[in-house]
Length: 212
Image (tube, rainbow, N blue to C red):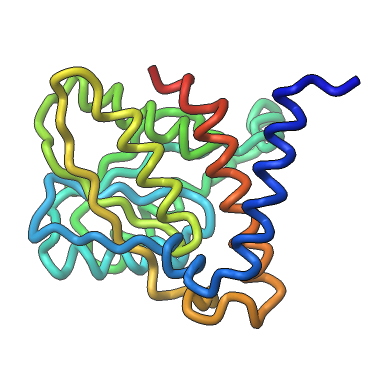
Protein backbone atom coordinates (compact mmCIF):
# COMPACT_ATOMS: atom_id res chain seq x y z
CA UNK A 1 0.00 0.00 0.00
CA UNK A 2 1.38 3.38 -0.96
CA UNK A 3 2.13 5.91 1.68
CA UNK A 4 -0.27 8.90 1.61
CA UNK A 5 2.56 11.35 1.02
CA UNK A 6 3.72 9.40 -2.05
CA UNK A 7 0.24 9.45 -3.55
CA UNK A 8 -0.10 13.14 -2.77
CA UNK A 9 3.20 14.02 -4.42
CA UNK A 10 2.37 11.89 -7.45
CA UNK A 11 -0.99 13.65 -7.80
CA UNK A 12 0.67 17.05 -7.57
CA UNK A 13 3.21 16.12 -10.23
CA UNK A 14 0.52 14.88 -12.59
CA UNK A 15 -1.56 18.01 -12.10
CA UNK A 16 1.45 20.22 -12.72
CA UNK A 17 2.32 18.24 -15.82
CA UNK A 18 -1.19 18.70 -17.19
CA UNK A 19 -1.19 22.37 -16.23
CA UNK A 20 2.20 23.07 -17.81
CA UNK A 21 1.23 21.20 -20.97
CA UNK A 22 -1.89 23.34 -21.38
CA UNK A 23 -0.59 26.68 -20.18
CA UNK A 24 1.08 28.62 -22.94
CA UNK A 25 2.53 31.09 -20.46
CA UNK A 26 4.43 28.41 -18.55
CA UNK A 27 7.66 29.05 -20.44
CA UNK A 28 7.46 32.80 -19.89
CA UNK A 29 6.79 32.25 -16.17
CA UNK A 30 9.87 30.06 -15.86
CA UNK A 31 12.07 32.55 -17.71
CA UNK A 32 11.86 35.11 -14.93
CA UNK A 33 13.52 38.42 -15.76
CA UNK A 34 14.07 40.93 -12.95
CA UNK A 35 16.95 43.30 -13.60
CA UNK A 36 17.87 45.80 -10.87
CA UNK A 37 19.69 48.99 -11.96
CA UNK A 38 22.88 47.80 -10.28
CA UNK A 39 24.05 44.84 -8.22
CA UNK A 40 27.06 43.95 -6.11
CA UNK A 41 27.78 40.85 -8.19
CA UNK A 42 26.61 38.70 -11.06
CA UNK A 43 26.38 34.99 -10.24
CA UNK A 44 26.79 32.77 -13.30
CA UNK A 45 25.18 29.39 -12.69
CA UNK A 46 26.84 26.38 -14.23
CA UNK A 47 25.18 24.05 -16.71
CA UNK A 48 25.01 25.15 -20.31
CA UNK A 49 27.82 27.58 -19.64
CA UNK A 50 28.49 29.08 -23.12
CA UNK A 51 25.05 30.72 -23.30
CA UNK A 52 25.27 31.79 -19.66
CA UNK A 53 28.79 33.17 -19.98
CA UNK A 54 27.78 35.26 -22.99
CA UNK A 55 24.85 36.73 -21.05
CA UNK A 56 27.02 37.34 -17.99
CA UNK A 57 29.51 39.23 -20.13
CA UNK A 58 26.77 41.37 -21.69
CA UNK A 59 25.38 42.12 -18.21
CA UNK A 60 28.84 43.04 -16.91
CA UNK A 61 29.55 45.20 -19.96
CA UNK A 62 26.21 46.98 -19.47
CA UNK A 63 27.40 47.97 -15.99
CA UNK A 64 24.94 45.88 -13.98
CA UNK A 65 27.74 44.74 -11.64
CA UNK A 66 31.51 44.95 -11.39
CA UNK A 67 32.06 41.44 -10.00
CA UNK A 68 31.22 38.05 -11.47
CA UNK A 69 30.93 35.00 -9.20
CA UNK A 70 31.22 31.40 -10.40
CA UNK A 71 30.97 28.37 -8.11
CA UNK A 72 33.29 25.50 -8.98
CA UNK A 73 31.17 22.77 -10.57
CA UNK A 74 31.60 19.11 -9.68
CA UNK A 75 33.26 17.20 -12.49
CA UNK A 76 32.23 13.81 -11.12
CA UNK A 77 34.34 10.92 -12.48
CA UNK A 78 36.80 13.37 -14.03
CA UNK A 79 38.42 13.55 -10.59
CA UNK A 80 39.60 9.97 -11.13
CA UNK A 81 41.55 11.14 -14.14
CA UNK A 82 43.13 13.95 -12.11
CA UNK A 83 44.19 11.40 -9.49
CA UNK A 84 46.11 9.64 -12.27
CA UNK A 85 47.88 12.80 -13.35
CA UNK A 86 45.59 13.92 -16.16
CA UNK A 87 45.28 17.71 -16.39
CA UNK A 88 41.56 18.51 -16.44
CA UNK A 89 40.16 21.98 -17.04
CA UNK A 90 36.78 22.20 -15.30
CA UNK A 91 33.70 23.78 -16.85
CA UNK A 92 33.90 26.51 -14.21
CA UNK A 93 37.51 27.28 -15.11
CA UNK A 94 36.56 27.37 -18.79
CA UNK A 95 33.75 29.77 -17.99
CA UNK A 96 36.11 32.06 -16.07
CA UNK A 97 38.78 31.99 -18.80
CA UNK A 98 36.11 32.65 -21.45
CA UNK A 99 34.99 35.76 -19.59
CA UNK A 100 38.58 36.94 -19.36
CA UNK A 101 39.09 36.46 -23.09
CA UNK A 102 35.90 38.41 -23.74
CA UNK A 103 37.36 41.33 -21.82
CA UNK A 104 36.41 40.95 -18.14
CA UNK A 105 39.43 41.68 -15.90
CA UNK A 106 40.65 38.58 -14.09
CA UNK A 107 40.45 40.33 -10.71
CA UNK A 108 36.73 40.98 -11.32
CA UNK A 109 35.98 37.24 -11.47
CA UNK A 110 35.65 35.19 -8.30
CA UNK A 111 35.79 31.39 -8.64
CA UNK A 112 34.40 29.92 -5.43
CA UNK A 113 35.26 26.38 -4.27
CA UNK A 114 32.21 24.21 -3.89
CA UNK A 115 32.33 21.03 -5.98
CA UNK A 116 28.71 21.93 -6.75
CA UNK A 117 26.40 19.24 -8.10
CA UNK A 118 23.25 21.35 -8.12
CA UNK A 119 21.89 24.89 -7.92
CA UNK A 120 21.35 24.31 -4.20
CA UNK A 121 25.07 23.59 -3.80
CA UNK A 122 25.88 26.78 -5.69
CA UNK A 123 23.54 28.80 -3.46
CA UNK A 124 25.13 27.35 -0.33
CA UNK A 125 28.63 28.16 -1.61
CA UNK A 126 27.60 31.76 -2.32
CA UNK A 127 25.97 32.01 1.11
CA UNK A 128 29.16 30.79 2.78
CA UNK A 129 31.17 33.37 0.89
CA UNK A 130 28.80 36.21 1.72
CA UNK A 131 28.70 35.20 5.39
CA UNK A 132 32.45 35.73 5.54
CA UNK A 133 32.58 38.71 3.18
CA UNK A 134 29.35 40.51 4.04
CA UNK A 135 29.64 43.02 1.21
CA UNK A 136 26.52 42.46 -0.86
CA UNK A 137 22.85 43.36 -0.68
CA UNK A 138 21.92 42.73 -4.34
CA UNK A 139 22.85 39.87 -6.63
CA UNK A 140 21.94 39.12 -10.24
CA UNK A 141 21.64 35.48 -11.30
CA UNK A 142 22.42 34.53 -14.89
CA UNK A 143 21.17 31.19 -16.15
CA UNK A 144 19.23 29.49 -18.93
CA UNK A 145 15.66 30.78 -19.31
CA UNK A 146 13.84 27.62 -18.21
CA UNK A 147 16.05 27.37 -15.11
CA UNK A 148 15.65 30.99 -14.04
CA UNK A 149 12.51 30.80 -11.88
CA UNK A 150 13.72 27.83 -9.82
CA UNK A 151 17.21 29.30 -9.44
CA UNK A 152 15.73 32.50 -8.01
CA UNK A 153 13.59 30.49 -5.57
CA UNK A 154 16.63 28.54 -4.39
CA UNK A 155 18.90 31.56 -3.91
CA UNK A 156 16.16 33.53 -2.17
CA UNK A 157 15.58 30.66 0.26
CA UNK A 158 19.31 30.24 0.88
CA UNK A 159 20.31 33.88 1.27
CA UNK A 160 17.32 35.52 2.93
CA UNK A 161 17.46 34.21 6.48
CA UNK A 162 16.51 35.98 9.71
CA UNK A 163 17.30 39.67 9.44
CA UNK A 164 19.24 39.22 6.21
CA UNK A 165 17.52 40.74 3.20
CA UNK A 166 19.30 40.21 -0.09
CA UNK A 167 17.69 41.23 -3.38
CA UNK A 168 17.97 38.49 -5.99
CA UNK A 169 17.68 39.75 -9.55
CA UNK A 170 17.59 37.50 -12.60
CA UNK A 171 18.73 37.72 -16.21
CA UNK A 172 17.84 34.72 -18.41
CA UNK A 173 20.28 34.16 -21.24
CA UNK A 174 19.27 35.42 -24.64
CA UNK A 175 21.78 33.04 -26.27
CA UNK A 176 19.53 30.02 -26.15
CA UNK A 177 17.35 27.86 -28.33
CA UNK A 178 14.59 27.80 -25.72
CA UNK A 179 11.46 29.62 -26.91
CA UNK A 180 9.57 30.77 -23.83
CA UNK A 181 6.63 32.11 -25.84
CA UNK A 182 6.07 28.97 -27.92
CA UNK A 183 7.72 26.25 -25.83
CA UNK A 184 5.04 23.66 -26.71
CA UNK A 185 6.16 23.57 -30.36
CA UNK A 186 9.52 21.88 -29.76
CA UNK A 187 10.19 18.58 -28.01
CA UNK A 188 13.29 19.85 -26.19
CA UNK A 189 11.42 22.88 -24.85
CA UNK A 190 8.50 20.74 -23.67
CA UNK A 191 10.94 18.49 -21.81
CA UNK A 192 12.61 21.53 -20.22
CA UNK A 193 9.31 23.04 -19.05
CA UNK A 194 7.87 19.82 -17.63
CA UNK A 195 11.19 18.97 -15.96
CA UNK A 196 11.40 22.38 -14.32
CA UNK A 197 7.87 22.18 -12.93
CA UNK A 198 8.66 18.79 -11.40
CA UNK A 199 11.90 20.13 -9.92
CA UNK A 200 10.10 23.16 -8.48
CA UNK A 201 7.62 20.87 -6.73
CA UNK A 202 10.49 18.72 -5.43
CA UNK A 203 12.28 21.80 -4.14
CA UNK A 204 9.20 23.14 -2.39
CA UNK A 205 8.30 19.84 -0.74
CA UNK A 206 11.68 18.33 0.07
CA UNK A 207 14.88 20.14 -0.86
CA UNK A 208 14.09 23.55 0.64
CA UNK A 209 14.89 22.10 4.08
CA UNK A 210 18.53 21.74 3.00
CA UNK A 211 18.82 25.52 2.96
CA UNK A 212 17.89 26.11 6.60
